[in-house]
Length: 431
Image (cartoon, rainbow, N blue to C red):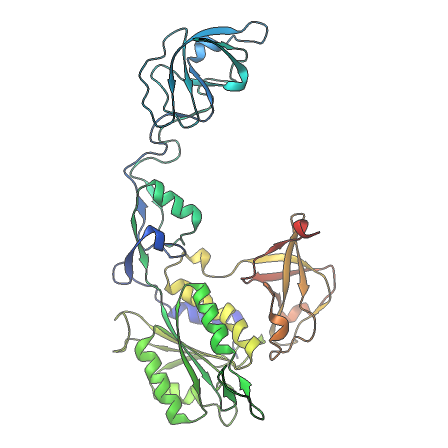
């Protein structure tokens, strides 16, 4: 049985990131939200495009106003008004000033902005009561934010609102992004029924299909739900063959333990897969199978390596192992930078006592809050059984307990892996 870190290393070693040329596509900027850049972005524009004002006020020569005080103001002649979006028409010479607004182009000759609050307009003249602290005050110099030709945004970053704004400002109407990986989902077990079916004795609803599809979509993948597969080796083999012929990655839940009806591992072996992992020292989620194929005719991209994750059937175990192992693998596949493969882990104070398993790395779900700059973790109420899906709802963090920690008392620190949604809550805004 492998440790969590050993299992993660084996998985990530087998993931070959998408190729920027063969696995990218061009999309409009409006369609780029949450996509991952496949190529670095440069711009022929400087930012700012020209020297401009950071304040409403007057563009002046610093030498003309350096001695201004409320008791002895300096009087300047206003030679023009420069609205935002207009080109200056005059040069500011000795004893002159130009009325200017935030974002307006600096006129020739001027090197400093005097804020409107420190002035008084009198017809075509303006009184300067307070000199700026230094020359170039409140002037945004051309190229001070970004110089044309440099890398504006690096490949491997995800496009959120701020990045979209930068691209729009750089007039990038289309961007090259990595394609979304296609991930097939199978649920195995004779006891499973679809969401629309009436439950019979001993039957349960297949919630894993929906949970994993939602988790995949949130990660940026394209889920391909293939439904419930009964515990019949021939049927299961056909479904797995279909999945590996159409997807980049396959997820199944159930059928990977040591029971008499757990057929997944032997089917994978018969299909020529290299089984990397059969069990991991994690709670919940010990029965975890990870298999790997090299090139195969059905691969979407010929150089891609296909991974198969046989997740536990218990619903909490399926999601925990997805967050811990599948999501980082997908993020690497999708071209994310290495620093973004794993979910953030923070140190928090636990609100109640936590107990680690003697032999396995334990993950306890609950709510992570931020209060006065410090994280606080509140475990979900009720039992932390791998079959208890109910109290997983609302969780946004997994406390990580190593076997060596034993018991962590309330008030002590614990590492917590952030999962979302829901988003991290700020308790200062709640109380």
